[in-house]
Each structure stands twice: as C-alpha cells, then as structure tokens.
Amino acid sequence: EGLGFGLLLGMGSALETLCGQAVGAGQLHTLGVYMQRSWIICLATAVALLPVYMFTDPILRLLRQSPEISAVAGRYARWCVPQLLAYAVNFPMQKFYQAQSRVWVMTLISGAAVGLHALLNWVVVARLGRGLLGAAMVGNASWWLINAAQFLYVVGGSFPEAWTGFSRKAFASLGGFVRLSLASAVMLWFVFSCFFLAVFLHRRSALVFSSEWDGSDFCAAA
Image 1 (cartoon, rainbow, N blue to C red):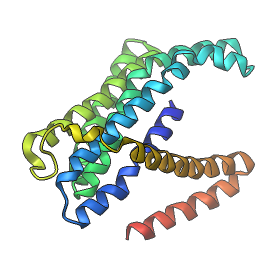
Image 2 (cartoon, rainbow, N blue to C red; image 1 turned 135 degrees about the vertical axis):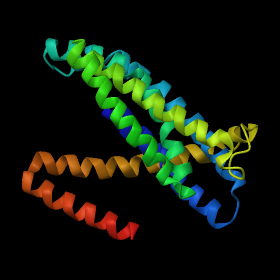
Image 3 (cartoon, helix red, strand yellow; image 1 turned 180 degrees about the vertical axis):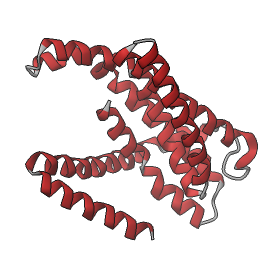
Image 4 (tube, rainbow, N blue to C red; image 1 turned 135 degrees about the horizontal axis):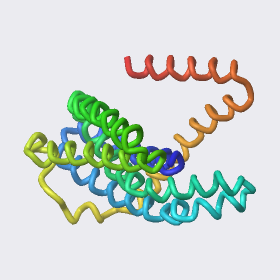
C-alpha cells in the first residue's frame, strides 16, 4: 500500500509547479486540462502496479518472508486495489484545489471522512469482526467517498474558469508530462527514503531529521 501511495503522490505532485505557473499567468482554463492529464498518467501507473498488489504473497515468499505473513499481506494487498486507484484520482485533485486556495474545502471533506472512517472501522472491524480485510474495505470506501465529494464540488460549478468539462487536450503532450511526473516521484521517493533510512540507522537521527524537515516545510509555507 505504501508503494502505491508514495509513487502516485510523487507523480501527482508534478501539478504543483504547473498549476502554480498557470494561476500566476492568469491561465486558469488550463488547470482542468492539467488535472485530467495527471489523472491519465496516474491511473496508468496504478494499473501498472496492479501485478505487485495481486501477487504480493509470492513476491514476499521470494524475499524469504514467513508464509503466514506473506499470505495475510497478500490478501490485504488485493483488497487494497480500490485504494490504489483512488490515490490516482485524489492526488491530482489535491493540487488542483491547492493551486486555487480551496484547501478549506478539502479540510471539510477530509474531516467528515475521518469521522465516518472511524465509525465504519468500529462497526466493521470491532463489531462485525472482519479484521484486517474489514479495515481495507473501510479504507476503500473512505477514499472513494472523498474522491466523489471533491469531484462533485469541482463539476458543480465552483471552478467556472478552471473546469470547463472533460477535454481531448488532456491526451496531448503526455510525454513531457510523464517525464515531469516521474521526476517529481523520484524526488519525493528520495525524501521518504532518507527519512526511513534515518529510522533504521538511529532513532535519534530520525528525530533530528524529522524536526529539520518539519521546520523547513513550515518556513517554506510561511
């Protein structure tokens, strides 16, 4: 699950630069096209990752993990396929919202989704006893509810200049967009790799790295 999340988050983050430039240049009509183009690329990437999710069990066994853990992880990964596709839809929409300073909308939707997610987890996992697979099902539902709410807000007329409907232009210049998305994914992968490496090397190093990273992000945001 973390593999798909990290890779698709990185690829979707390529929109930060493009959408920021479009807003600065007053070309709001390009934002919807950029988002659709990113959807195409991220969904294609998610489909390419499907074999990893579908064959997690044998892959882990080849890596000499215990059969019990491999079997459970394999079942969980297969149930998480809808989440993988949800990431591909969600991350480009995040950048579309952020570029137009509509973060408060995402906050409200996510806040409502968190409350519903907690309730559904209690019902499905604790009360119905569905365990790990139940948690995966609830995660799928929560992610797709967020996507549905955000998409309805977009197509409902809240972005009249940025969203003018689906366009064939989204299929143009895909090569350059793929290169930018891959570069963004690699950059984010290195950031996460440094953090995880610090965790494995020394707990104190991880805390220092985390505090420096959070501080730099805060300064950049300010």
